[in-house]
Image (cartoon, rainbow, N blue to C red):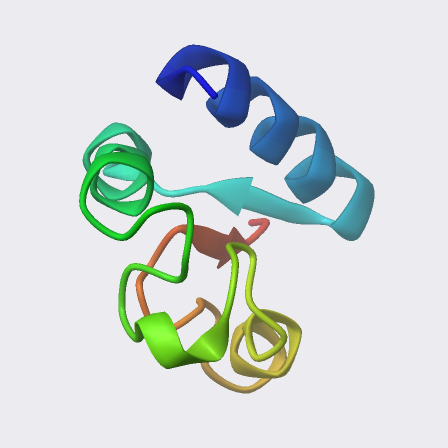
Length: 73
């Protein structure tokens, strides 16, 4: 999947969940797709991005561990 297409999908997902993408989203997405084979860029053992931990982390910390998703201001 191309970076721009994946970014668009993540933007739609973030908007539906009340999140926003990080200003560093392009770098994080590039790592996710080109280094981590689509898996969570902060911990590949978490599975594919967005991982199952992101919602809990955004609720508790205001962002997910890899900083891709941020709580909308």
